[in-house]
Length: 123
Length: 140
Ligand SMILES: Nc1ncnc2c1ncn2[C@@H]1O[C@H](COP(=O)(O)OP(=O)(O)OP(=O)(O)O)[C@@H](O)[C@H]1O
Ligand SMILES: [Mg+2]
Image (tube, rainbow over all chains, first blue to last red; front, top):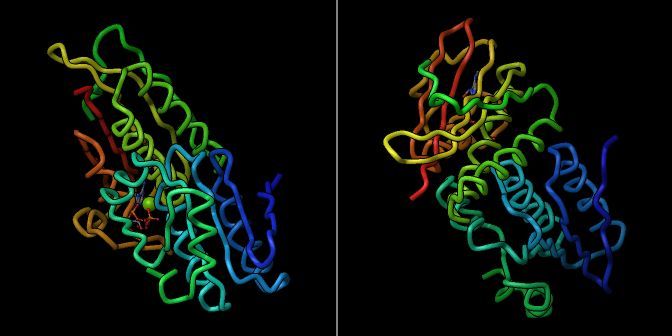
């Protein structure tokens, strides 16, 4: 019943590609799985690719912010990549600024961001 | 509640009883918004607002229904959705509509954010009698 999104590992980076519209429980599962995997794999970075998502509501938005916060506590960094322009516009109007969430335009730029020293990667 | 539907435009009624229903409602609203030729940004806003309201109906209203369809008034066309439940209702609407106010563990952005995302927003509620929220996004 409860679906789980696969988490890939490239070196010290965990990569998740969200490919379809998620049920709330699946979103929560992903949040837990990522926290677990950061520790289990001693990951230093997490990339969440949301380029396939047509909408991000407050529930998914909160998950992204929570994963970013959890990874910081676990000494890793999270970069959300591929947010569609219409999604970004909608999120801001909804009132979710995602202030603590680092973003990049695509997977490649996300990986590049993670390979830079901590201070600049958090900008 | 004044039903937004004009003659000959029967809405579809969808149940909101499980969390999977919220996903189905997002898909139904997406299909309607495309059919109605809302712009991509307006489609995204309408689907996001519907997602917030459907989750509220489920979480706080104890489940309910959404009626969704196209509306046309004075030559204007749009997509409308009415979310209804017979849950506890909202005793302080002003507080509930405030950015950041939540009675649960949410961000308190669902109601206030949904209102910003759509063109028409109407909330009717009475303590003990339930809640009905109507939203409309018009084609520009
Ligand atoms: N259908 C409803 N029935 C009863 N109370 C409701 C209903 N919808 C919203 N509320 C009340 O209004 C409050 C604000 O709702 P809103 O959607 O803005 O925030 P939230 O659901 O708490 O958090 P978020 O949507 O950001 O995750 C809720 O916490 C709840 O107390
Ligand atoms: Mg809500």
